[in-house]
Image 1: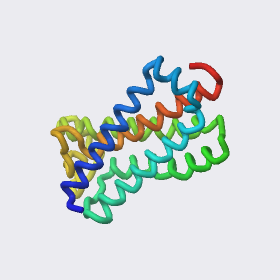
Image 2: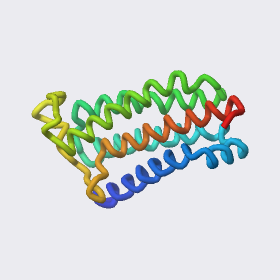
Image 3: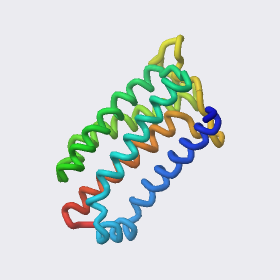
Image 4: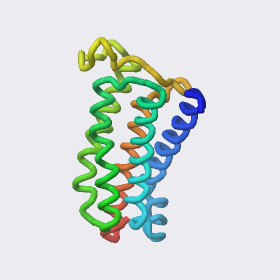
Length: 174
């Protein structure tokens, strides 16, 4: 698969994850999902997003040769463990799953937002990255705004929102 086709595919996945995260915040939707047993699938959906994000970032670096910058590494540090943690939590049906997933997800999402901002506005870079692999470089720019940090943010946001919805549905509230 060419890098252009791959970029479009993962950009569409990120936009879908972002849209799904927004939809999960709508109270009537959240109530319907709670009634349909969303609490049982939310950790698995979060795991799927973490697994796809991990595979996607590895594909960019190992298949297409995109060298990650320092902020990309920090986002990876937040995302990669989520694959294992979410799988274990989902298998165990751990109602406390959010307490150890949300800190990683929120931290990773925050780094993603900062990374996206310095890609969009390079003057905002506070010197977090080296000159060898600048954080302001855009390897991907689908639809004029979807870059790798944008995709990472969409993944972190979906994981966070799904687990917050899981918390609410596991307690029986909407």
